[in-house]
Amino acid sequence: MSFPKHFVWGAAAAAYQIEGAAKEDGKGPSVWDAFCRKPGAIKNGHTGDIACDHYHRYRDDVALMKGLGLHAYRLSVSWPRVLPRGRGAVNPKGLAFYDRLLDALLEAGIEPYVTLFHWDYPLALYKRGGWLNPAASDWFAEYAGVMVRRLGDRVRIWMTLNEPQVFMILGHADGQHAPGDTWNFKTLLKGVHHMLLAHGKAVQAIRAATPKPARVGLAAFGSTFYPASESQADVAAARTAMFSVTAKQLWGNAWWLEPIFKGRYPEDGLKVFGRDVPKIGKNDLATICQPLDFFGVNIYQGTPVRQGKNGKPELLKHPVGKPVTAFKWPVTPEALYWGPRFYWERYQLPIFITESGMSSPDWVQLDGQVHDSLRIDYLKRYLRELRRAYDEGIGVAGYFQWSILDNFEWAEGYQERFGLVYVDYPTQQRIPKDSAAWYRDVIASNGETLG
Image 1 (cartoon, rainbow, N blue to C red):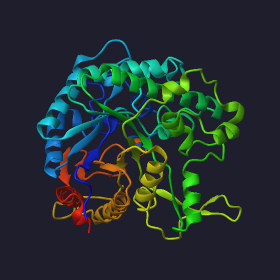
Image 2 (cartoon, rainbow, N blue to C red):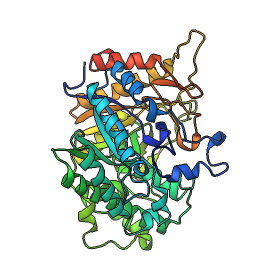
Image 3 (cartoon, rainbow, N blue to C red):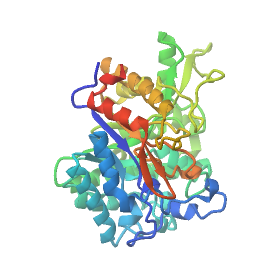
Image 4 (spheres, rainbow, N blue to C red):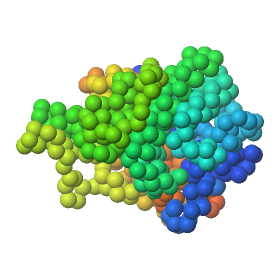
């Protein structure tokens, strides 16, 4: 059994997590550059200053991708690398780097899938209010236009934002990620609204600037729930949990996705959030709800749900001894079936799994190799569930493994290793892990080797 003929097999990474060259060739500082200087913010005091040195080693990294047989590579652009102050003057050397990277990818037969924002917000714009500034959406649209005019002759697939819930909540409410803010709930909702407007205006800017037909979407954070059993009641409960707002918190899907795909904030959310909901301009929701070509979603784990005695969804704890990754995230392959199924039912757009993978305690063993058998087992389980989704008629279009390289895992520094390729950070040596060879065979067989 295989995936559809045109299924896209890829891998992903993000600019701040791999590029390094934090102060080279005119790059401006991002909120992450600043946050990494805050004592105690990042484990072991790590920074992204060098990371995987991809800025200088991109040709070697593209060669590794080609060796895996990747169809596509999902990358992000560093906003302050190309616009050091976030807007205005463009940095030619920053743009030239992405020219070189795209050309190398295309020469290797690898399609670039480009994400405009993967969390490295320009520090200069943050100092002007960041997402709380009413002009924030126009700043982002301006940046989108710059990138599409420069790269649009070679890029057919664009994504506006990566995981809005994560960078807004962890960065602006919990203070665990850059820029380290702890806004109250009302302030957070205002910032979220401006961020959603930024998405919509960026979609408009991409479509206006692209020199050839382009497909546009985003990489959503998949807050995924799956039924505790396949009974009709439990399936209905899990589906409800996926798209409902029941408490004054934003980790669910509805508040973020319904405006983008349905042109409305969810009624239950408006009721629960009450007076904290910001003023919504007359045309705001129409601006946010731009036609999109696909639904990109990052799914790593899920939460089991059953129908409670009161008829409402009841979220369950994982059983004692449930397998977990090195990051202590539960191993829940079911999420890669039920997540796509529920998103497909609701939004009816081709689905790309834009990130999925696991952190593993990898090291170079005595034979000089990295034997990550747990990752292979994990990926096999998850991809079998994704294939089940396709077999049942779900519009699954592609899968991007996170990540191509071990890299800077935000507040965790370099402690977590998600890569198919091991990176020895002091020497920058790359060692493809066993999972890289395994994934190469999966791609070559279009999934038939999954069994």
